[in-house]
Length: 112
Image (tube, rainbow, N blue to C red; front, side, top):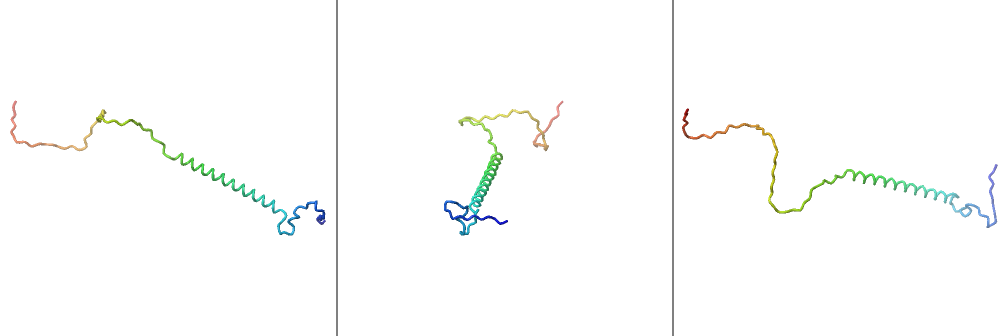
């Protein structure tokens, strides 16, 4: 069985790919270019979305790991006497004991 080839001389009948015959361009190249362009656009969109997700995750990590602000008390500065008092009970422990003596001249009298 041989494929049928249609030849026409009528200029009103359009044969697909007739303008490209003999030009060295394959018949389906426009479709292929459009398909490749769509694929390239899809890849670009996916890469941009992945980059946006990675950048968002990076920003989230930076915000999560930065130090929290410390609450402080603020007041107006005034000039005056400084009064500091510490009132706490405690226990004193002596680590090293020393004998302290002061020699004096004199006599001792024992009276009962």
